[in-house]
Length: 337
Image (cartoon, rainbow, N blue to C red; front, side):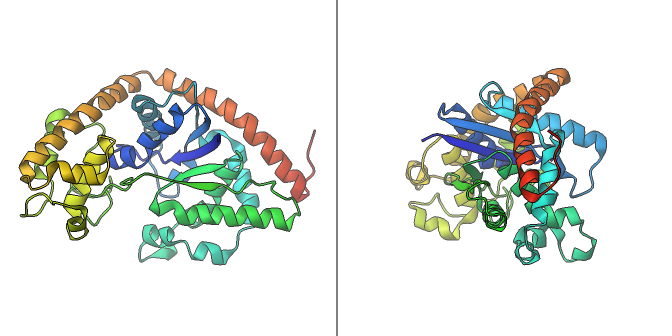
């Protein structure tokens, strides 16, 4: 069965292994399935919910596109564009914010996490960005959206908004209610220094993550210093419940080698961590260094990256402009033909 897939990545810069295994590797697999119609968006409007340096933001948008392509996403098979290039996203977000309810947004746990203790100083954009996310998805009649654990709640909100719009305006199935595309085992990669925390560029220690820009020696050194425990490698997956760092490293190995966690545990059962770390380093170097080198090469050709975004925006706009026009007509706006 064919799927119309929409997903977005924030242009945060300095993308890391968590971004790759948590999203981009899955995008490549979806892109390579000829039955899928894929739309991948660099969500730069979402990025400005926190203050950005304008020159850095431009750089990060291009870096995200370069990472897509270097990882194996083919712009001839999929639409790749940046969100701010399509006015329908902002228009759609406003209209849908008049459909969404405050109570729904108040339940969004990610706002509470990102805003921290001083919620009064958080931007309105950070609070309402799940509505923009809903507009992103609904403008393209996406049938499926890849989601990790931290985005499931936002997709539920998107589904609620679509259903309420359809009911409010008596337009059955006009806004397509998307289904979650649950990502595979170990899509959530944790810090190399603390197995209870998600791998993040915001963590102070660079040793906590594998950056896609890291060279061979840096990768080997980070894995060597990655936190483990004094016990031998686990003999079964039950042991991993109390050994978060071991679980994370084995999960990384399983994801990179396209194997299951069970088979990875079995392969290294009883070994010393040092032996396992050597094998994990080899695998990371084999998989990540070619991507890193290709990203660096692509970033030297800004005009090529910009042309991909421009071409993608033209294709995306043909879909989104038609949908937003229909939305405006349904709401009751006067539309020029």
